[in-house]
Image (cartoon, rainbow, N blue to C red; front, side):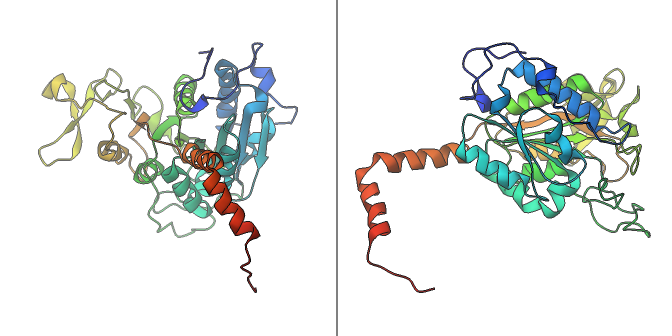
Length: 350
């Protein structure tokens, strides 16, 4: 999917390349240094394959990361970027998006980086609806620091930092993002390249804060965390806007609203297709999307909705801020008031 002419959504104002690009254009000369079998390789390969399709110039692509295995990402993409400090990638990306509206700004972070020390930065970037695209690699473990439990690790998790089992209640990143009023929220899986490409394309095309949770396997410290989502009996629940929410090898299972108001899994042939909930990603009220996010078991993940939970339009923080600055610059009265503050007689003793 190559974008031509004027960009839409989140890419509005971002210049496109004049000559066609390919994957090599977005591949740096740095040796990729992740453990063999790490899911990060699949995400990187998908990203490098996607960027030429979008047609965005390398010099208009910025990748900001925090600290963790996934945060090596900027080194491996031939674009501008920064390997920043722990948990602060959304804050730095906010500054970049505020200063330059001609950039496609990506944040690459992990479940530890984004949801532990970076929790507040993530929440407020989403709440403000800054025009950035966040890829949250969730392997449910601290990988770079060698296997401690993370904010998404299940209760009872045995790790180096919880030898008797974790007693923490884990975060559900999708629920958290929806609660923060993120305007775009999605989930995908590292091993499903076509789905990953589709979701990331929709995310970068969205104008506003877009969070994509990527289930990513860590073969060294948390191997098999998402095995229940693979194979013919996969527990993945595909979310497609405007379509009934069905899953299973032949779509034999579906989601309905039960008499008690909760969402429940049923056999489609027993209740009829007309009773199956139809997904609405553009619904302004995020409550149904939140309910769908709760179908994911916080323990051993056997069922997980994947796809776009929410995709709604609302003004972005950086666009609104730029409009205020522009309005002030156009007003002689405001300029006069600002100049008076700068050159006034008031002094301060510190």
